Image (cartoon, rainbow, N blue to C red):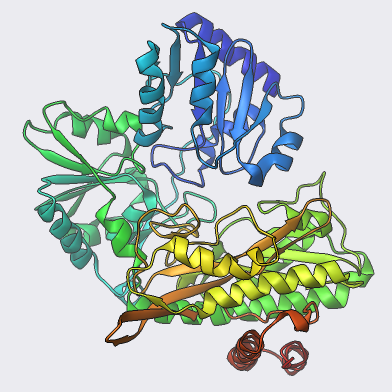
Length: 592
């Protein structure tokens, strides 16, 4: 079926069922950012492959609401699909709901599949439309009846990690979650989010590309824990190990039936941002619902010393791969045989050669020249630039290792630098350094680190449209909360042990893009009469190019930080490099 045929089939079902507007979110029953093929509904329906967006279909209009990261991509991918791009003014805002309100009058019916919409999204739809007399139905799946050859749910094995890797056993993690339940007077707790499930049970899988998770739900009470998972994915050995922790198994599709059977008087804690509407709607009205963040979300955000130690080793291995990669690019770019897609494949191969490698942590962003100005660009056959010995190359990439998750962005010059490129690069680097050097009081929020990082960029009346940093999991999702460094950050304090990216940028559409990203771990620094102070330890180990720098724009503290950082990179990775590679890196890390 073409996208136009799919759209026609959906509209036919809408007409049959009396639906005026149909909403398709980019999600799954676990409210995941990255989706298994079975749940890539927006991609199948419209052709748009970005990780954030919402489709709205009426009989007269079909639109994709997404943010500025995806405008160029969406315009290209939606061509001849029957869908139009609607540009969000505010990232993640439910602006499509207001649009629906303005298009129809009561009692118009608005529907969606409650397995794809979070409770928070469903509440936004209801709160805006119901007061105007709209009828809301969150139990319509209009895609499955028309999706020919829909991919099945994955059935690859789940496996457990030893405490030597995780630093904390499953029993202790369940105990920590139960302590929070007791404090909130909850009698049970449902975990829908896959990263929380993975952390609590020390379970990993390969159900979602780039994310080492397995599809499932966990229901925890004061005495029991039930993992809802496809039985074919659990070996007898894993089943026995989970049983030793007091974890029993039920089928993946049994979770909503189990919730419907909860006895009156139970008090269940669920995370409204990480639970789908259909699951929420399965809970009987006789059961009290406590809406709060999953206790495990904060617990897993604070890495223990074993995890941090492993993460440091993963960074060394990742730095070795990155060093080999940039040397190879520099030495081969003049051949004309390198492209954005081919260098991404080569970088994956270099990572795969490192100890403990499992997968990349997201699709590599290799943006050459003006493609670097697209923060979420992914090269495809029709857009795949050939590299030449001129212009800037931005590479944002990462790896999943059994000992940690990496995410790094670097920019290098392939030749013929302009003054504008040098100034933009240096100003962004200055922001990365100031964020990395920050000393802050305990209780500091992410928006404060965001402002510290942006200050030298704002001082030149430049800016960037994305957040400064996101939390990163330990051999888990590359984007993990609850903490973020951005101007609209939630009220989450930075705690010791949190791993976060610092990644300011600067983008000139049609010209070039700059982003320099390291991961840092927050740590206690000192206490005195003025309070408790913290700072960051930089984890990422890969040289920062110095040939793009306009030195006059840096202060002595920035130059000292950069020289010390590059020397540390050299010392850290050279034991794993050949003599030729070490010699090349020595030149790249010379003090400026």
